[in-house]
Length: 186
Image 1 (cartoon, one colour):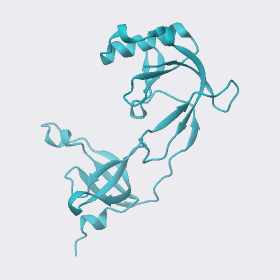
Image 2 (spheres, one colour):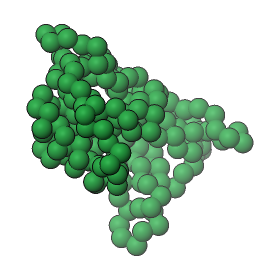
Image 3 (tube, rainbow, N blue to C red):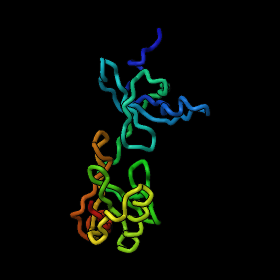
Image 4 (cartoon, rainbow, N blue to C red):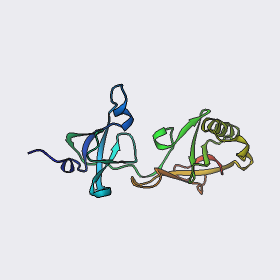
């Protein structure tokens, strides 16, 4: 008796995932390890697996019959994600980037605001300019006079949240894991 895909798609099953572009590319398919954290109904009665790739926080919603999903034999407890405050570090998967040697993150509904993790206003401005040039933002529309020094804390959000993390800019010097930032509003 063969297992159906719905029976294989259980929380804790280790999987390998390939993005569609890798499946249709002429080069070798790139597979990334991950784990199914749960399932949910999809459109037209299909079943979707929530797949968290190793080293990431946000799950991908993948149809259980997707060609780029390989089910492995191993089933393990789903690892809990770290929650609460954290010290930010450069990690493109988590939306924290290094520009001009400075850590920064776009925030806001459309990523139009910047949090620049540094105490030095000159270096904060240089990082904002480097980010703007790389992303095609018009420097004439950035109000560098509004660049504001603040104390902030970064906090992880749950797996299914709209954002991976949030930043609270109401912290004070000496608060647990507070870091000095410069905030550039839209």
